[in-house]
Length: 130
Image 1 (tube, helix red, strand yellow):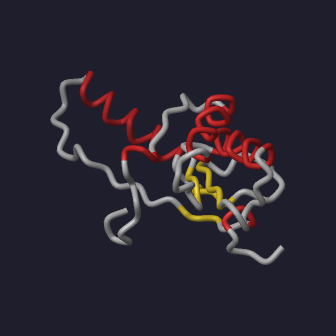
Image 2 (tube, one colour):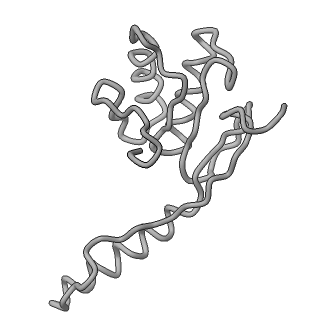
C-alpha cells in the first residue's frame, strides 16, 4: 500500500467475517460513499462473490465501473475473479509450526513471516480483455 501510494483510509475498510452476505452488505456502504471506490479487494473469494453480487444489483459493470479482487483462488465467477493464490496452505502450516513450538516451549526466532502470494489476473480487475 505504501510502496504504490494507495488510498487506505479507515473509511474504506470493512469487516466481513469471511461471509458472502457480510461482504454484500458492507459493499453497499462503500458504494454509497461520496467518492465511490473504483476497486475492492475482499478478504477471500467468498467475500468477493458478495461484492460482485452487490455491484450487479447496483447496476455497476465489473471491471469497467468497479474492479474486484479476492484471495484464495477458490471461486468460479462471471466475470472470472482476479485473486491472490497461495495464502491458505502456507499461512496454516506456518501458524501451526509456530504454535507447536510455543506449546513445546521452544524459542521462536522468527515472529514475523512474510508470505508472497501469486496474483492471478482475470477479468474482474480489467487486466484481461473479455
